[in-house]
Image 1 (cartoon, rainbow, N blue to C red):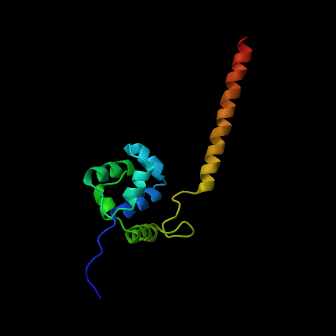
Image 2 (image 1 turned 120 degrees about the vertical axis):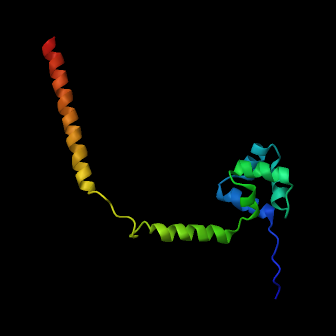
Image 3 (image 1 turned 90 degrees about the vertical axis):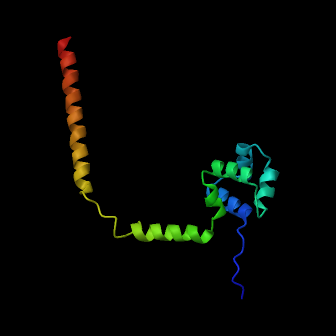
Length: 130
C-alpha cells in the first residue's frame, strides 16, 4: 500500500467548481476570452498555467487556492457541518420562533384596517370640502 498522495487534477477541480456554480464551458470561455474547446482542454489537464488559473478563479468567484485544494469530500463535510450546526428545516433544534406568528397577523390586519379608516376619513373631507 502506497502512502504517496495523488497530485490534484486542477482541470477536474475547475470543472467541478464551474458545474457547482451552474456555469457552462462556453460561458466561462466567453468571460475569459477563450474558446469552449480551450476550456474543455484546460479541464482535461492536470496542470494549468498560473495566468489562466488566476483568470478562471476570478470568473468563478473563488481563489486560486480554492481551485488547487478543491475536493468533493470537503464540500460534503462543509454542508454536513452546516446542516448539523443549524438544525434541519423539518424539526431542528434551532427553528424556534421568538414571537407568535398569529399575533403578527392580527397586528398587520389592525394596521390595514386603520389605514382604510384613515383613507375613508380623508376622502370624506375631500367630498365635504367641495
